[in-house]
Image (cartoon, rainbow over all chains, first blue to last red; front, side, top):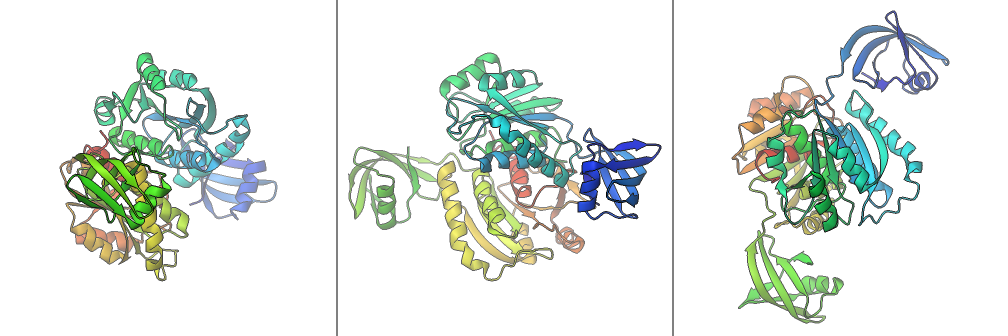
Length: 244
Length: 244
């Protein structure tokens, strides 16, 4: 059943009225009276609706069923990633991160960033569109927000405000991701920090340890900067019972 | 330290002698006498070597250390994937699958394959090269083999020969991946079957159940055909202690 997020939809008295962008979108999907659709409010609630009217200006649909979107994980995970070079890896992290269950995705600048993030804000609109597409396609109940975090220090602050803050690092003294996740099965929120292509500088890992993040290893295999966040997120979704 | 797989290297009396393709590769990497390299035999053993001679024809290196490659997971996982349409998703599965620890990757044709696998054998050379690149880059101890499996039934046979055979399915009656993995922490081998863009037909899932595979769900989120194998593999690597 076609599913989309309802930006400006007005739901009242058992009827959903879509105008503007939503009505356009419905037209693109060729929705006609008699069709059923799922409208998601982007805050975790799904409305199963039956279309009764569809024209250029608006679409009217009868609400058949209202239920919480069951696709939302029980833990809100923020991916914090060193900005990769070039759009492909960045967009890959956004698309796969949303599919795998991330609640938000933020990029930052760190010592070994080879990307040149002058005015990355300009890219936000495109990044957010990719997140919305992935959220629709994978049946998410929210549209994960994509943001530019600025410096690694800002990412540390975000991670410290979550129930669990992970800093994925490839060398030196580290905790095993498994041992950390085993002890954190009932968290409600988490942050996963991963580096850019060049990885993290030792001083950055030391800082992460000093501020109180878990500096974690995922074993001996070296994961690319666009792969590490997805693998770590999948492990976290699994360990918190969200791949069931 | 540069690391590569040694196809035709001859290791004898504490010396490694590389000719042909390996010597070429060493030249491409601009390796010179005095440089240290890690030569991996592709069967799980690493040779740390010190180059003493490097010319067009051959490279001679002194073996400093011989040790098992610690990057190899304790469980050999075969990814069996419905052939996606277009090269991008296929190559993505190969690259990320190798990084995430798959031991082999095979593609098959199923009811809803939109790809047109006429003579997919032709693509095998390129696919294998992608696997080798990813194996080098991620520090694997083997080069995972990429193969064309033919029909879904053939994939079933492969999966049934492993300690654990998983069939990932999006709807209907399914076991939770988590509950299955919880009961299979000490397996030595596993197979993960995932569908093409169009997913699996109900009869294909029924067949999987009848032949004795675990028909598994990864929750309510719909994963793309190139994402599902990586997420399932990451969960399996985590549950078997290979993300530590």
